[in-house]
Image 1 (spheres, helix red, strand yellow):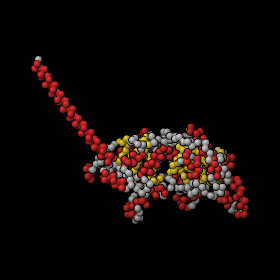
Image 2 (cartoon, helix red, strand yellow):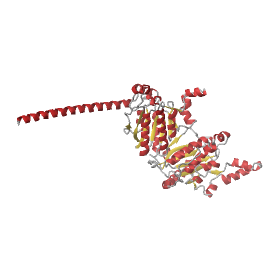
Image 3 (cartoon, helix red, strand yellow):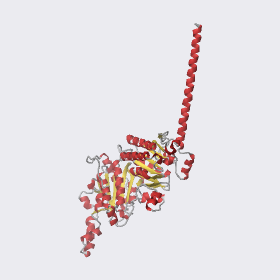
Length: 536
């Protein structure tokens, strides 16, 4: 019996000793794994390393992670795929691996609302696009659509990763496909915060809004060296694809800012006006600005002489909440103003002809600018408020030969297909075909109002009389007075039901807000179709 007990004690001791060794080994192994994970995570945080981070700062640019920190609410960012590394082995790439592989992706809160974001890391492989980088970006694009949340892309990349060949090109195409599928489903915003060249440019071009940073960003299909080789034209990066040419000439970018910090702050502001997706409306925001506030200054803002200009932005500021609005493309096609604002706490899209620039005439650039804005608002259930003061379409061979007929039809098409609430206020001139285009009653305008200064006619009195009295110059003076009496006022249109009311300018804010309240429950659908065929 004693021998049995001794044997059992020795066996128990061996068992305890073995278990202890196994436990200690497991602990050691777990600690080693945790240490490796922590090291990899720390490496991912550093991107391409401190030297390259310092070089990024020396250029006046923030790092990919610093940008995300400024974009999202503090402490809300959750990163995905921080440990991902490329699988390329060609050209010595097997020995060059960086955790995250050149892009930071994840989700956070902006103004308390879910927003997906990717931020290209120029310190890691120049932010170039590899197969794995594309997969990371595509993953959050898919999640944004599934969840119904905006997507913001922070672009700072040298382009395709040449070592990966067609895999990199395939990655771009995968992203482009998702840009298209997400269009009209969730808001997509691109910030160009460094180089963006070659095929990479088409992803921002497919998104809803593109913003650039002056002095540090560039956007072009082919760089200065290629341009020089092909066309023998000497041009700098800034001249070819900087913020100035794209916000003033090409219209590729919707705005430009002086620093990364300003661009990110303004993006946060823009997102506050937008809904999360096409499944819901933009969140209302309380304003202490009374909905029934009258503004007597509007009664005298428009000059009595119809040939004198005024600033339509003054009208916008006086009718929207707290005189605040977010203008889109302020430096491009300045003869028309498009902006987001709030009225009665609700987001609205503002479209207004600008008499200060070319008398507010509609030309090719203005038509395309406004058409794209109208279609965005319609896609995301943002009501449209149109301020009309348009003398017509710009005449001339240049406009005709560049396709003003086709391009002008885009704006007409955008208003005609829009099913959101549409309110138009004719402030002064509404002449010819341009009057039809600017959210007229015949294009299913819900509410069409006019100020007493409004003139709705085929054309201005002087031009009309010159045609009517071409062979009788002596009768033109008296005929011009008669034409003004008959047509240079809103009564003829109101008498025919083309205007719903003629209102005092000072009451414009109150009336629009009241009509928007009624139109909240508007239901209108276009005929079933695979897709439309607008005049592209």
